[in-house]
Amino acid sequence: MKLTVNGIEREIESPPLTPLLFVLREELEVTSPKAGCQQGGCGACTVLVDGDPRRSCLTAVAAVAGAEITTAEGIGAPEELAPVQQAFTHHYAAQCGFCTAGMLVAAHAYVEGGGTDDRHAISEALAGHVCRCTGYVKIIDAVAAAARGDSFDLAVTAEGQYTTMQSGGGS
Amino acid sequence: MKAVGARLPRYDGVAHVTGRTVFVDDVRIPGTLWVKALRSPAHHADVKGLDVRKAESAKGVHAVITWKDVPLLEYGHLSALGIPADEPLLAKDDVRYKGQPIALVAAEDEETALEAVEAIELDLEEKPALFDVRKAFDADAPRVHHWGNWYPHFEAEMDRRQIRKGDVDRAFDEADAIVQGVYRPAAIEHVPLETQVCQVVPEPNGRLTIYSCTQALYFSLGVVAAHLQVPLNKLKLVGGTVGGGFGGKVDTATETMCSLLALKSGRPVKWRWTREEEFLCSSTRAPWHMEIADAVSKDGWILGRKMLTLHDSGGYARFSPYGLTKHSFHHTGAYTIPNLSFDGYVVFTNRVPTTAMRGFGVTSVSFATETHMSRIADVLGLDPFEVRLRNANRIGDTSPNGVVYTDPSTVPTIQAIAEHLGHELSADYRTMTNAKREGELLPEHLVAQLGNPEDH
Image 1: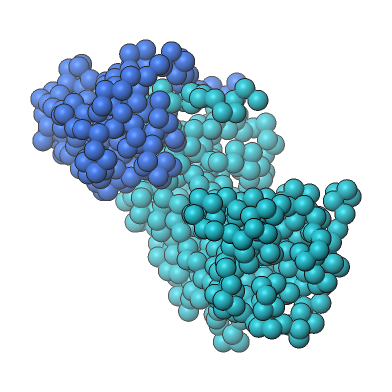
Image 2: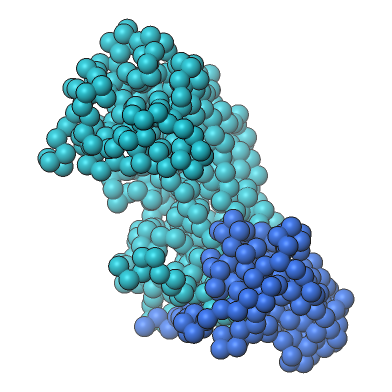
């Protein structure tokens, strides 16, 4: 069984009924999709399967064999942000960041699919995604900006650092 | 002051939107064991038997811990402030809330850990449970806590947080009306998108590296060191990346137990709570029961307040005595009331222990006092904005606990709210400032409470 994840084709060793979320996180070490509830309720595990948002926690890997999987890592790198990533950064739509990767791929699919800046339509498109920090207003602002094709001066923001837990070593 | 009014990038913004941020659950450590907990299925019970031998000998299980494995079983989150400990890290003689941890397993994978938890033999003798703080004081109420049904260790071993100011009986004698209200905000679960999660790595140099999602790294450092009875330099905590906390990640929920399992198994361990565990077993914002009776004059002065607060602490004290203390200091809200009688109790029930959430102890009392201000205006037939401005904190007024206000913001805040809502204030109130009281706004009943802001 094969998957193409963020443009890289990989042979999958996990059993066929393994949730796609587990395959991504534990076998392929692609960690932006999160195990927020593992019941399909929070949206933090959302990835794009052939361009469509799917809950990876409820998707058996065999059901998407051969598909193109896209996660937040694959939408755009720090030095080459996609429009929704620029908009999320500019509008402060990511706060703690835990829901962001799922929210962002759904927003990307919405914008790529020709979604407009209509706030109601954006709310519908992101309805299955829970965020406890922002109150959603900034997220909807960001998606609307990306849908309009707003441009941002991200000369400064693109230099933002990674927040990475340093590995142990005990020193 | 370069940052004020400027657009500054979040230092972690780009990492968040490109999926590069590494949260605790994303740290990859080869050979990590999964952790699962045996939690109390009962709200209230005595532990009659606990046998983990089958779980310990199961294939793929590397360590099982119970209360016997904890060097210092009871250590309170406020022990460093002299508040005595009451909660065992793992249940010993009794369980006081559904979901209380009793034993933990570290195994090769999640399924093996779950099967080992199932293999633990637990014998509980259930007891009647108490869920309603209003019944905690009844003679026939179930006894929840070894200290009794309410916290008895405030200063001078008082069993309540008590405030007395002025002469409240005289205020009630002189009142034109008594306005009463009962306010009962419910428990709230924080629901961070990141559930409680921890990874602990035993290092060859004898230290433990602890990856923690805590909001309070140094609290956790002290708590883990105390339970383990090791010096702080044996622990390296790695934190700062929190997938939502809101107060719910102040309690040290996982780090100590994972550290014990890492030490016992000699392997790295990871414990990630399920969403169900997060809802059932993680601490919540407390439910509160607040009764207010105010002595008021017909022109809208609050002459005195009597207040009773019952703070639902759940099965153990944790931070609740501190939360109730903050609550008591704020029980007049943003207003000055010279005559006070406040009694607040930290009440134990068979609910999950409660904790901080956004304005710990104060949010509840703000809800009650602001609702009550509007109720007073309603009863007296007065403008609710003007009742607030009349009684608003001014320079020189004193708080319930005797702090002299030097720059209170009630007046401009209420004026701004009125303006934004298009609410017309009369000229006196529109031009009011927070300057020291004088003239009509310094009635006789407020003279004695005045302090000197210069002394502050």
